[in-house]
Length: 398
Image 1 (spheres, rainbow, N blue to C red):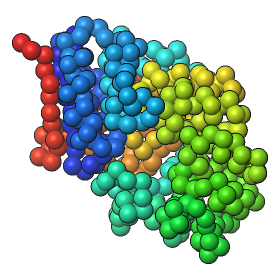
Image 2 (image 1 turned 120 degrees about the vertical axis):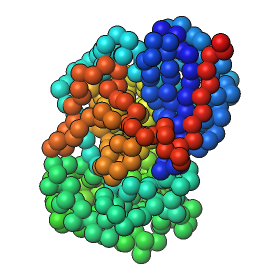
Image 3 (image 1 turned 30 degrees about the horizontal axis):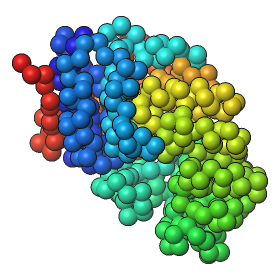
């Protein structure tokens, strides 16, 4: 197997997505994707990665992880790490297709027949127009599956709708606008009451039948995060996610001394070295590793194994592309300490199928993998030929 081309596709319907296609001399393709600052990722892939991988014979994920490791930027989830993560996922896809095995089996699994999922209550246009994680980029549309607007305006009805689908877990973030107004330094009683009304209505409507994840996006100072977490305690959230930035390890440790809710963190923690201090403190209940942002499946499985050493379950992050989501499912099916997989029904039913086909189907709140080799995906018809798709390819010199 020889890599003969690296192709990128940036679709107009999701400005933050960069799809990576590795082509081999026998016609097989491996798929990956990167999310956030897609044009910068594209430039890095063609200027730096393509010269190192195009023309290579039988490159392995571990080998390329070493070759592509940046000299600077390795401590964060910047352009280099996200782009390398997309390439790594594509290499695992290629390896599976050449061996005829699903990636989950290459990773040593499966250890389960299916896995539960929860719904992150975003809408179809969430974080679509810019790379900013702000309410101005929430993209609240009026169409189907606008779950973000629903959790803000009719949270009880949304919770019941999700339960009727068999989804028993949901994630909401009603505190973000309050953080934006103060820089996260404090929360007013009015803002706290308004956000808590969302939580209260969900519990009043569906009780404890719904696992309720509350996302704080790392926007808060420790004192304000303590106040929010204490207000949430009577409602027994399944977890509170990223109340403080995950690199503020000592602050997270101090927070957990003061509150009685489980803390989940990790989507923006990068690699084993990013997770190790969090795990050593013994204060996080769940590790929400992002398979792509952490550098790909090669690094993510090491993070998951490291978490298992500290008896911490992993719950991989979604919202970063359909190919990454497929990689998450394969990791979760192969990893003994995988707890649950994040999904966004608004993405799965709108723009994800415009990128790839073959994603695992969800029934009754659970997903199972097919026996298809690799990640089990194919590019969707029309993605390349869409006039709004920016396509670029670097080929082997002839």
